Image (tube, rainbow, N blue to C red):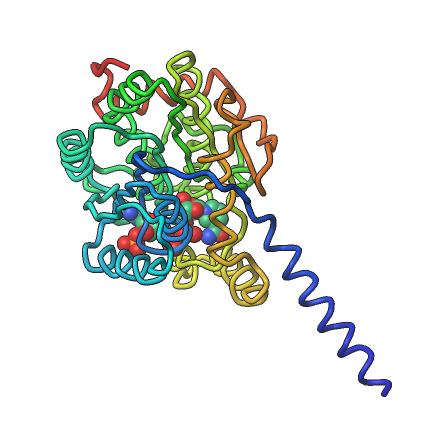
Length: 336
Ligand SMILES: NC(=O)c1ccc[n+]([C@@H]2O[C@H](COP(=O)([O-])OP(=O)(O)OC[C@H]3O[C@@H](n4cnc5c(N)ncnc54)[C@H](OP(=O)(O)O)[C@@H]3O)[C@@H](O)[C@H]2O)c1
């Protein structure tokens, strides 16, 4: 009997904490018939669950994935899981590797040729704690290049279509960027002096990830500012700590910080942290919540507004990062 009590308390504590850590579920009956949504990195994790939900609301969902086999498998599974829902829209696969500007330009060009509207752009794909090499095809740091510069270029190329959608349909159009609360671990402001970690001695896989997520928030903030009055609004968010494949580099890393991060979050607490379905909720909230249609450039977590660090709210840095990103992606001559 004496031994039973701590076991029962332990079981309650475990499931109580697990329930608490899952966070809120975004409830909305909003339908998206006739609307087009693009989700990057939709073949697994949060991106897959986001795409599935929006497809279930009747949207035409375009999944941008770098691997055709994985992308097709994800789409097949989404269709199968949604087979009993009579209100699904369309779901299709397009290829884009965010670590290559050629691939991003080709994907954007195809989208511009094929699509007459784009209502919600979800910048979700990401890599975490990848090593210093390889760099991206264009010589950028893999994390900054994929998580920020790749998405920056992609968005920059699609702004005309986003604007046209807002104008033609007289409606709110959204750009949602999946960032992370990990931006708070950045040990300084955005590294405008060495965005791509060319100075080898400074590099740490963790800091490179934190900086790329800081860049995500600054980008969303600046984009919102630059598009004010166009009908396009922007949001960045922390999805929670979620059991996905994101930790793949950390689990293999010889870097002690990366390894400990993986061990603590994914091994010790692996059974408690958010499921991908729960991890998609704040993305869905930012994409669909009606009360946010006149709000732009803010940061969210667990389906509510959150204040990011002072480095993530630095408007001067946001503007400088925008200008540097334009130079690096050769988009400074594109009209906004
Ligand atoms: N999981 C968490 O705890 C957590 C916490 C905070 C923020 N986030 C953020 O949430 C977002 C989604 O992550 P997740 O947890 O769902 O991770 P995930 O399961 O690893 O999914 C990441 C997605 O990004 C794609 N991707 C990676 N590099 C790419 C590239 N070069 N080009 C195109 N696609 C690429 C992956 O494709 P492949 O399958 O082909 O690699 C995959 O589809 C990320 O931005 C991440 O930073 C996650």
